[in-house]
Length: 72
Image (cartoon, rainbow, N blue to C red; front, side, top):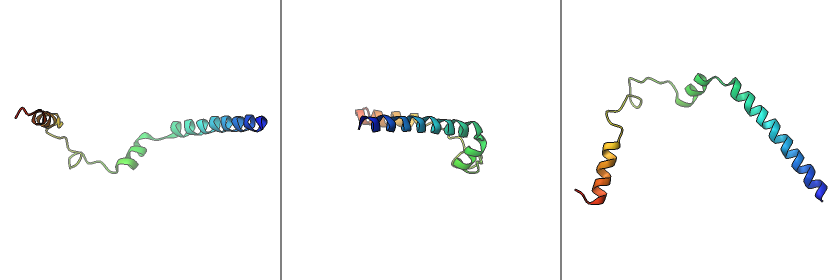
């Protein structure tokens, strides 16, 4: 039984190394701009939802914290 466990571990170690090589090769061949375009779609930063916001939301968050503390 122990021999089977050793062989099983060797097989998984070998598979892990092979998969890591595949992953590394795929990442090296990746075109970052194409990947972003596929993930985000066409980006027109002049239109919602990508237009810059007037506030980061931090002011609103602080307002909520103040309200929760009871500092109305």
